[in-house]
Image (cartoon, rainbow, N blue to C red; front, side):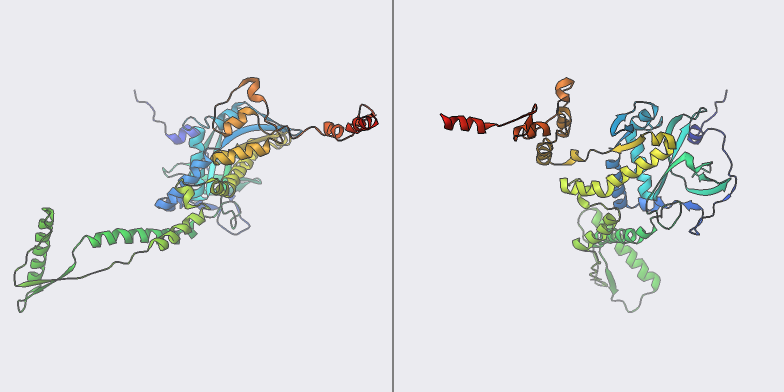
Length: 418
């Protein structure tokens, strides 16, 4: 009995593939409605891959949550959507894997599409990040459709509203983010510099020169034969570790001192920094040598905008207008304090204790300590230097139960009277 082979495509989209219908979407910018991914070309660059990996690794630490805000009070929902986003978005990925892949595709292609899988009742059952070779926009009855074409030849056609679309460099095109073509020059320069260093090493370990023969005239084939014999003898002698080649009086070897051109340390840094700057990331972040100041700069310029972008995109595609008005949101939280120095964390807790912002367990989490739990862990850290406004009025001579508080003045008068 032959068992039917199921492709991953069918597992995600089902067996029925809807063919494209409608007309190509006419864009106001005049650009083509088809987008072709060239992201893998830049991802082949070592330094580009390091930058994308660093951003994706930190972005994958975000904590997706389904919350509801009512009258300023935030409640976290524990339903199916919250489970999918915070634990297992689809059967093949953990939340970390999902966020890493979404971010990695976004930064390599500047467009990433997340397919929202639903059951027959319209309930969300999974989220799948897509990396198509190209996609094309269509229009029918006032609605936008999108067709994904994948590397294996399969295609899928669906409403644009049924996918979450994240994009970077969203400027010229009406729908898609711009590609990374402008980065190609910096990548080629970096690759040329790396290749130059590799060739310099090869040149420094090889012998280059001219064989000059004392014979009056040699035929071309004899010159080639003698040269090949010299190369063979030299390589054989190098193989035994001596590094010596022998010549008789008929030939003379004149060495050519070729000095390959390579970039110095500062020039090489400049080449790499062009790529670092493109991704708004520093070398210390990539090398994991950052301090809290560098981390905050990276957080505010890269991670925080990404968390806001994802929060907005997921919210509007998961919930309807009325649900959003009722306070339902998807948020991607980042613990930015976690990467600060211990001294910075302690000072933060001291300063915020005035407002009583943190419970004991929250403070212990910031310091990477285990929670106490129970009522003790729920107690808030608060300095005694701050008191309630009503008590402050009384303390400073305000009204007390409808009677004027004379304070220490009465005691002093009575003392003087005695």
